[in-house]
Length: 284
Image (tube, rainbow, N blue to C red; front, side, top):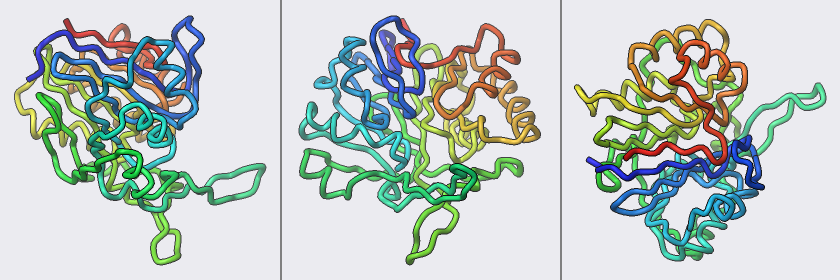
């Protein structure tokens, strides 16, 4: 279990909360400071990581480990920038982050497949100091810190994003997103969950974590929930279940979307906050 003096700060996100001259981008990255070391969860799209870290006075040269939630460009694009400062460093990820990922989008009324995967091959990052450690199951990655690995899909209503594809044998097929994983911190205040996009389904993800943290109180949920891409029926069921978990803080951002975030604020009142660039959770 992590003792107190923990600070979790959003470095990259679609919007900016601080009055400092930070930048917003479609992406996500979180800087985690603990008594046992500093960590980076995701790296954003690559446009704002270094600039925002400097604005927020977060020294990326102190990062001990990097965790990647999945292989989309808006979570992995800043990895080369981070590696310039960290040199040799362990990078925890699922092996599927290097699969060829696409999205089927409507652009100017026309359907188009656009590449949205990680920008470079594994060797490119390794030459720049990345030491990949691939995780597929619930694994301890630091003192009181865990990556979920692959999350089983058990809920009947969490269907996933139909637009997300992967190239296999020259054909585009639906991406099962096995690489989607979240970070779990066991703290004295309770369990803290940091999401990338929760492509496995928010409730699938939380229930899987609770299977490993039975009987532990929940404290905070932070990150992208992908609720902004759901139909109303699925959103209703997700919120109903989320209420049963009794998180004290719920910080939604990135792929949650403004409409879904507004709904979460209505449902969770002062427990909800929007986790954009500059937002911090402090556990002391």
